Length: 314
Image (cartoon, rainbow, N blue to C red):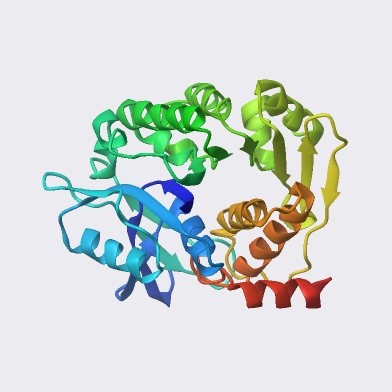
């Protein structure tokens, strides 16, 4: 039985070793980046059975990524390879404060060719949760149709669906297209995980109650709205919204991956049978741990590390 299936584009990440701009950097360390992969790594570290679906190039970066996924004890049965397209990659500079600058090289990548025939190879028998973000759908119409088909099939199979909009405006042709497509995909989700700023773009309101009402009306059972260091708001159908406070962080090192860490906590809580408010506590804690570490997933905790942080931060 697989706890969670994720779909996304992992990219080779080359992070500068020295501080400075990307133009100045001469030495880079190779690792892996990708929002959905971050979620998978976090869930695997917490003891959940995870499968990751993607399409990589038959190249050294693709091979490196598959090895990394396997080293994190994540299943690879739904990973395919393209001989005609390369694996996407990104560069990131090193900074002492603020967020690093990133440069993406994903145009024409292997995953950008992920299509209906690739999606058809994925079966939902024995999969408890399908976690989707808005990033794959941003790449092109081909990937978008495949994502939609998978969400429709997951819904029919009775698989629980979580959706994190994870806005990437630079990848879309227009804001209007982004809003239309992501709100359509959200209709298939049981739980939607917007941030307040994302919610304002997608629903036209920065009021967490209004954001939640929008997605509850579309059919979601729950909406958990991220509010940064202030925590999260949990809205369930037929219940009053609950404010779940965040955790105090002495120093923010890197905010990249915080939202992915939040998703890890929500999914972990669901799989452990917690209420959504209890799951939001886990989500806030993991997000707080992640921002205290450089890199996309270095701060994602084990069960003992998570329990210890919550115990000593309450």
